[in-house]
Figure (cartoon, rainbow, N blue to C red):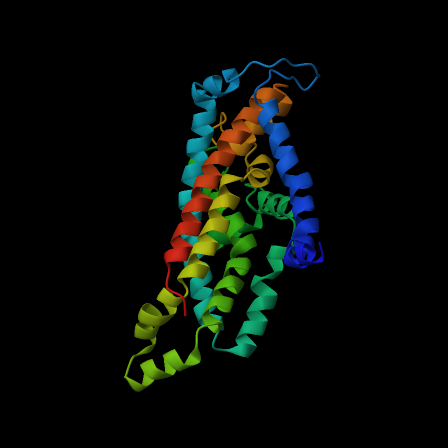
Amino acid sequence: MVRALRNNVGFLYVLPALAFVGFFVLWPLLQLGYLSLTDTSLLGGGQFIGLENYIKAFEDKKFWQALGFTARYTVFITPLLMGLGFALALLTSPNRRLQQITRGIIFLPVVIGIGSSSLLWFWLFDQQVGLFNKFLVDIGLLAEPAVWFTKADMGLLAVTISITWKVIGFGMLLFVAGIQSINGEIGEAALIDGGNYWQRVWYIILPLSLRVILLTTLISVIGSMLAFDQFYIMTGGNPRGQTFTAVYSIYQSSFISFKLGYGAALSIILTAIILVFSSLQVILSNRSPSQ
């Protein structure tokens, strides 16, 4: 008995964490799965209807349009966040004083709530009183203040600018941590061999930062796939629902159309898509070179 307890003492240490995950993650997920198999309304009731909600979801053009717009937003913003974050990390990582300054300036928006930052940028883009519009006119990029939220492309660009401003500091910090974890002897050996700065970035820093790049990409992709607040506040889905994201569509089905069961089915589909990206990231991360 005592020997068995000693052999399983490690399991006892992780038991509280397993109980937490089971109660707050797995149990709600199971409930969501069951809800997706019913015709439950926000007003109550609901009967088991099998896969009917899923069949309906695959025929729902509005949901697939929202999913397509979400994919477009993800493809648009992820390379931008990755490129700018990595460039800022390269700029600041060698210089401690510059790093401290940029941490204060660039990281500050990260601690602001997504709702507050979206509302701030909504007013900055305003045609009549928006300072961002005035700035673009003053520097000559615009002949007159633009109306940002009457076209889907303009709304997408406006949200992309606001989110880039908000989260770029987080990506920069991850990249800085990745660059600083690289063994300094590797860089010194490259210097002795005559490698210039860009050769060291291309052949040393970039390959050895691959795991951080994959992690940052995964965080960006998941965050973009779950985008809701910024579009709800800044575009409201306009014009004519063209800026509905997948989560916005789930919100509409669940809480505006009162179809909780159908909204649960859409949530399960979106979760499955995100799990595919997560699994892909884990596989690539395991195959990436370590230091």
